[in-house]
Length: 109
Image (cartoon, helix red, strand yellow):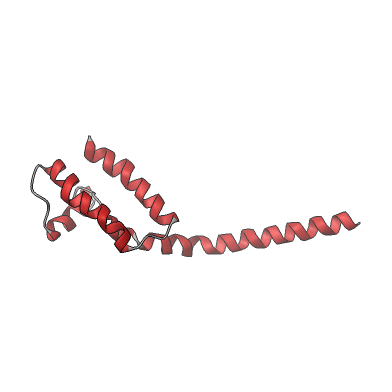
């Protein structure tokens, strides 16, 4: 139950937070340490995972992993989200300028 809660809820919240805020590798490293030192041993009933085991654990279940994402690998999500939404934001801002011009000119008439 804890693994399901983690992979379906906590990781989604991390993704949202990282996509909407700048987060550096250094900022997320303590979070990864907690996952590696506390959560993974609790789920697997083993000692903390080695770096190679951690990479395997981070894989999605259909590739043989547990889907416990390393949060430090998500840091590019902000840049990707920004790159995808920037054209849309520019169109919205341009649209608002046009609406303001139309409203201003209609009031003068």
